[in-house]
Amino acid sequence: MKDVLKNILLALVIFIVLVSLFSGAVDLFKQERIISLSELAAKIKENQVKEAVISGNQVALTLSDNTRAVAYKEPAGSLLEGLKNLGVTEENLRAINIQVKTESGFGYFLINILPVVLPFILILAFFYFMFRQAKSGQMQAFNFGSAQARMFDPNKEKITFKDVAGAHEAKEELSEVVEFLKSPGKFLGMGAKIPRGVILIGAPGTGKTMLARAVAGEAVVPFFHISGSEFVEMFVGVGASRVRDLFKIAKKHAPAIVFIDEIDAVGRHRGAGLGGGHDEREQTLNQILVEMDGFERDTNIIVVAATNRPDILDPALLRPGRFDRRVIIDEPDIKNREEILKIHSKEKPLSADVNLRKIAERTPGFSGADLANLMNEAAILAARRNKKEVAQTELTESIEKVMLGPERKSKVYSPQEKEIVAFHEAGHALVATSLPNADPVHKISIVSRGRAGGYTLKLPSEEINFYSRSKFMDELATLLGGYAAEKTVFGDVTTGPHSDLKTASDLARRIVTEYGMSEKMGPMTFGDRERLVFLGKEISENRNYSETVAAQIDSEVSKFIDKAYKTALKIVKEKRNILNKIAGVLVEKETIEQTEFEELMKNFQFSASAA
Image 1 (tube, rainbow, N blue to C red):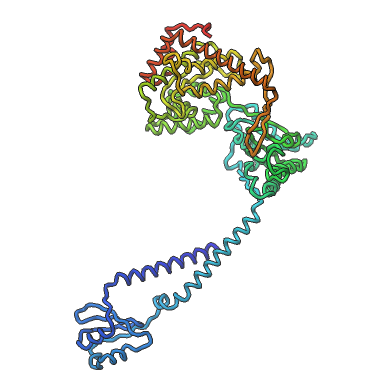
Image 2: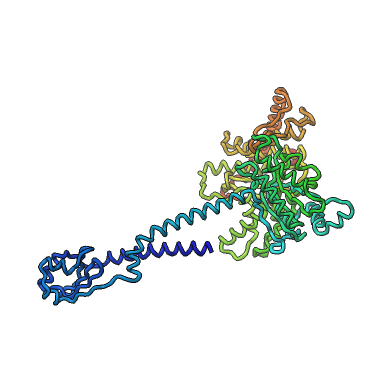
């Protein structure tokens, strides 16, 4: 009813404005001449007036030449009396057809009544909208502490474990949760307690949210989704109120699943930030802990949380009785990557030459979200080329786009710069091919992508879980291959290798301080990996070693870098003819694929002793 009244008032105001504009426009476009009463009296005396129509204060005239004119009389006076005073006789008036038109109807309303009524209507409309807005704000204030969770009905958009590729161990662990929700009496009869919570731990894009929705789909129970950041507001106590409201709603729909995404937004270690115990984030965390402890034994509500930072969560949140189970979701291996690619290719027309296995081989380290993005980019690329199907070419190009960014074709190198980039990338490829523990070269390109001037794509031939010292040393030498090539060929170096040098320096420091692979420093780690949290950022690291040990660490890092550089320099100098050949092909073609590179190298014998 309120909306109807609002629409009526709005329509009335619009109508009045339009009528006023229309009336003004009509008066504007009228071509009638306005004459004075004295001029009118003179024309009557000369018998130049045929007809006069009196309407209020206005007199519409039709002259003897059929033209029209308008005259205005005094508001309180009579037209005839005024004309007689100006010398018009009754005989002159009898020759004119005089008519008196009475004002009535809608026009009379607009002219006489509307100017009085319209201000009251506008004032009433103003107060109505003002009070309505105030009431709406008041209702929002009452609902400020209510939960903002979104409820998904599993019967409408059902997602099951079949829709989630890979993560077999995680699905096995979560299948027990599904069974708890389906038949809780079976476990309660044995004296077993239903788990209070499950926390999903994994890198971004590994499918934590999808797994949580699959649990709800398998159990066919309501699924409440909320982000950890949605609890926290500017006012202290709002987050805790929303937590209480969320669990109250969930209990009404039990059995149900409450999914809290990015729980580290409110679950950080207490006492690490500002505000002490009165901090809004800590108040919210305390309420979550109380609610999870306050579940009745027969309440069929399971809290599923997701985070990629389990190291910063409060210990009280992870203890048994709250989040009883931790499910680790790793990045998919080659088999799981192929399954994920198949799922995301269901709605995309693939050509007969597509081999998803090869795409899975070339995407180590890709998460499920990365693979979904890859398939989408391939479909976009095929559509831009006006193709009806997605071919292997589009999929291969999409890998590089996801990894490095789009091609920057507008970035044109000078002939000298092009030669430098070609020898730089040729140095990486040559050193990687010469060392036994380096990853195989899949592609070399001097086409700029993202922030890289060129790139050498190296991918492992199989999944690697453990890295050896020799593997790291060959990787260091490969990273410095471009630097060594520039130094050898041009006798100088550019800013091109800055990213390689940074990566190599970080890797060498981890070899010494984290992996215990330095013979001088021994099997020890250096530096406390627990970092101080200040307003959500890591700004400090605890050094648990002396300045003398720090100098020894720096010395060992320099030794690793120096040894890797000498290895790369030796390979580049001994196989200078091969380096020139690779760089020459790159300057000419700009890109060398794996098959072409292997064909280019087959006439040369590489010795593993080059390392």
